[in-house]
Length: 303
Length: 192
Image (cartoon, rainbow over all chains, first blue to last red; front, side, top):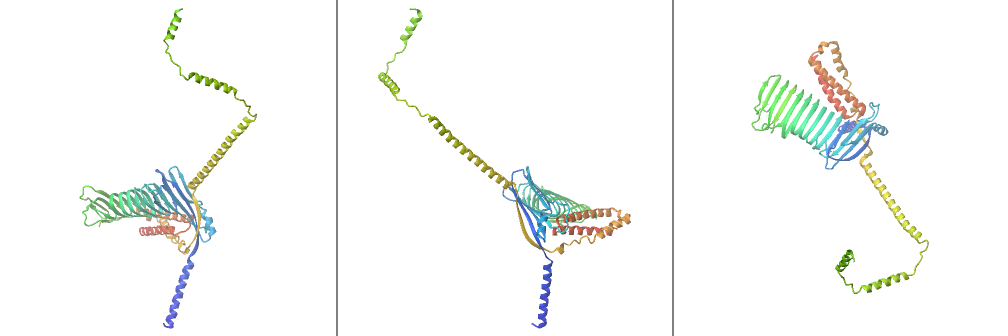
């Protein structure tokens, strides 16, 4: 190795170390103080869990016990531990039972924050019998719900929602959110505004209203009726079986892409409005109804 | 003899007859002897304090037994009460722990730079005020309403940052809203 190459190599190493060092300097060490609250309620039929979270990560899942377990974590982060501990007291919570309802909530006691106070967060873990009805209202947070067979109601704004293995049905209203769901079985009533919805393996009856949103839906075996009313929303339907569903599609000020092999009947086909229908040969079939204005529709058949 | 006496004599004669047992007179003799023997038994006068001693003894035992059982009952009741209270407290009072940890974060990433282009959004309002006819079309009105909704949502997120501090999740929300606002602003500029 020549002297020039060696000097160059050492120079590169020093430069790399300098960059890495600068990166480390940018990192700030934060003290994280967590108040963890846990409580278990004995469960009886007719109980319902009502959760109102703010800036909270929420996990709700079922378990085999006849109990409702609630864990709340209130978290304060600040470079100074004393400040973090002090600011943690600004976060309040409610965890109580009134008759058959269990109420859970977190909030900040002061409306305005002064300068240089800690960053505050809340986290929930709730485990309950799968048949326990649940109502979740969450704003500016993340919501994750798994393995429920009960009636589920979700009101969500400014946050993401993940749903997995929900049987029995759901009522949801969401704004400025991203909603992902898989293995959804039952009666679903969904209103979404300025949101992105992705649902896989959907079975049962669906009534979806969407505004300024995108909707991607993968049909599962046993999708019965699907009714979509969309404004300024793009809709894509995947894994649709032509043998099991008739289609009634209306798209105004938008484009339609449907499988070429299907014999769709175009009742209207202008640049402004497209009306399509399709009827399978089978005796019994379900219905897919889509009404879109200022949005595109794409349907892909089952492979 | 009058009639009633004759009837009586006749009834007596009709009564059944019974022969006594052979041992009857022997038993009568034994009973008589036993009665005489009892009368000959010596007599004793009990001590004067006998009854008081018996009385003292009997109630004392009973009292001790009563007091003892009541103490046990009270102790058992208190113990049950304590256990029940403890169980109730365990089941009704939440368990609270305070945990401490550390993490690192790059504060430069969380600097609030989302207000830098607000002048461009304000410019739309100024233009509409200066040239109202530019903004009277239905499309512009609709876009303005859309922009207003997005601006309100943006304000809600920023207010949330005031309460909970600037954090990555809220910055993501601001990013999405700002992207939509930018698209609406571009559409408005084209229309005007």
